[in-house]
Length: 431
Image 1 (cartoon, rainbow, N blue to C red):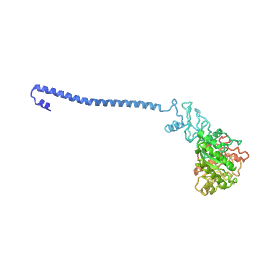
Image 2: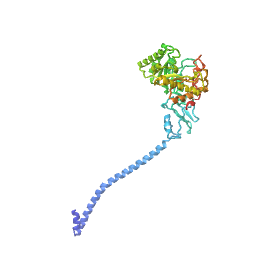
Image 3: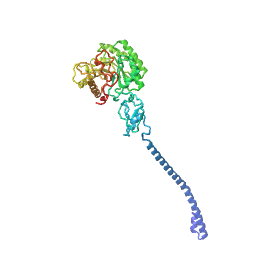
Image 4: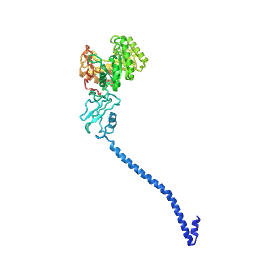
């Protein structure tokens, strides 16, 4: 402050010059301090702005690259799994899903991998495109079925269950490869099979086929008791060995016999067998498997139902003494099931162990033709679905191995004895 006071108050020129010089030096010092503080800060701000612009430019360049390479074209790799097709098809209407129900490739597409029947969609199909503009027919399915060997029918689960007897036409035992081939076709129309025995290693072969081929099938096993205790014991031993060798969770239940009351067995003997089987399974660590009998609905008593974990009844209106229509026959099955539910089951699950219609033969007034078999399975399937009814349709293939029995007994199958469909299973895809 003294410098400024001398400047204004001094009358000599010399003093004025000195004062201006001092003031100039003081101003330069102030300017230097200011510039030394502000300029570096501004330099840093400019540098940050420059870096930001460079980053934005780089991101734009990469964005252009990604947008260019994200689209599939005939010159880029296509997805190799069905999962990839299903995920991307939702956002791209031009992306079509390969059909998994056809045995033959389309005109411009060649399928080179086999996909075994499974509802998990875990297997993969490798598709090679012969033309860049090839179209893949779309199909909506719950299962993945082999596109090399699958029959030409729908893969939707048309039926809740099928009874399955693996015997060859001459009555001999099939090998595991034959069983695997048959079950691969069966898995296209159902998620459950019912066996009647463990002979011919049928339970062991079925478990091996399902496990090795990853088939989405549950096994409802059976023990044959019509030939007495030794045969029952033999079947039980084989059942336990097979269940322990493979995944026992694939076994959804075991029926002790089939219609043995109608063959003359006493109810007390049958209940004794049921209790014996249950106790043995519990001792073997297989107590989680339900144990029950399978009998005609008219013969299933409350006492028998009490001994069973569920009530499984065979209901065949094909043997009724009167026939009016297929519709009436189907409704008769539903009515008889409801009667058992109300009067016998006491709250336990009621399942149909057998129902069906033969395509040939004679059982009385019911007209046994292929047309009526088709009509029956169509109408029964829809009625059962509406009622929430579990059932096993009788049966998988025509039983030509039943030589000497009635012609009708040999013609209940939805497949021929050679495992070709007897009708178009697409007719079972809707109600």
